[in-house]
Image (cartoon, rainbow over all chains, first blue to last red; front, top):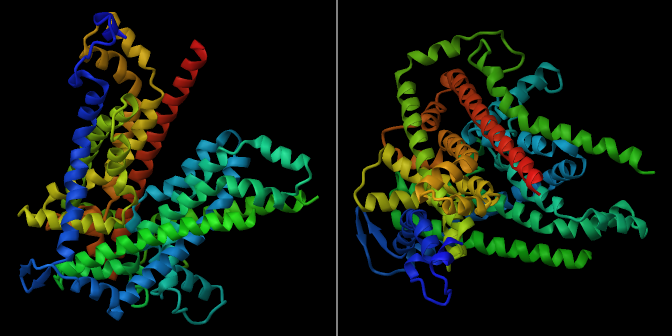
Length: 300
Length: 271
């Protein structure tokens, strides 16, 4: 270290301003302040608004739980929130179940081309999310690819109307959107597994299923949990997919949040809905983590 | 043995999965060359007329220009801010590092609509009108975590002793940065620029809430989706956007991999 050459006695305090700590803080502070100003502060303002009320255009700053009462107990918001949670849970389960074998395949059979496989898996996720959801509309629509294709083949005589504009269409489109985000964390945790453990289990007489349940699955659990959460948390608040393919039965909470900042213009209620969503999602995430841990204890 | 039965099952699943993953995206270019306004099978014949209509559409050209302005600014800003943070995280030890980087990375795990509406509220609160500038502010926040993950992995392999050697040999701090640090970390910086540009180009929610009367391409597309007759030109535009994303990401990946193999060679050479 050059500094030591200049100050031969390390016990002499060099002053805080020149220390490693100060330099690190100075370097990270522009980015941190940016996030503070444009993420933390705005969220604090949302929280503040959620306790206020709005009378036409004026904001009444008296503290009240009224917005939360509406957000939690009015049937329409209750239904929307429950449906959003249900859809996002289904999407995360389906995404993790479908992604696990792919991550497995890349990790255990990917050979020298692991990076190429990962790249191929991630490309679709980097193309416009709006366009991807739109293409599901093209596939599932009344006059869409699936209906016209099946009719041409003579399998059906009339277009199926239950394909588009419901919760299932939303689920399918979301599973498609989030696939790679689930594969990557599972892949990383599979890569970390010491392969000799699997050999040892084989030598000791464990069959493929026991090997999987008792060694590979528990050791890849951190990846499964983070994949689950990475998919679940953002999908709860998804706006585009329900708008494009959800129809009346696929509306989710984001549509209600947006409406309160747009036409309906009730910011405090919109804020309370946002905060409620964040809190409920966090609770659900905690429950999911606990659930997985308990499941693993039972299986083992 | 079970193996004879098990092995074809997994590849079959992988193939099906890739069809599921790529099928919907490939439909966009396929129908963009289809000589019919409706997206029905069988295809009606080949045409490039939907592409021919794009350059004459002034609303689209404005949106494309807006997207370029936003994309370039966002990629520069987010890369610059992420360089500072990534360097601080990989090079120095300081209190609060975990919390600070956690907050910087938080946009990755928050529902995007919540970021969008909270930004909208604070901007309107402070009387800032919505414009491309507000889109840039929001998308930069959103891109920093991605840039940072790219940059941290690029900086982590960096050998600190190289910089120390340079300083010992009399280079100034700036000279060391330009002649030693920069060449090593340049690939990571370049991929961060490309990745954040791609994200910005495709990002919809923040642009939708924060763009006011200046739409970016995804916001323009959103407006067109209401009209069934506009679908073919949206598909043509979408094809071009997908092509742009794929090219940019492939370039980013190639840069990243070249740098990685160079680093491996270097490590093998010295140890």
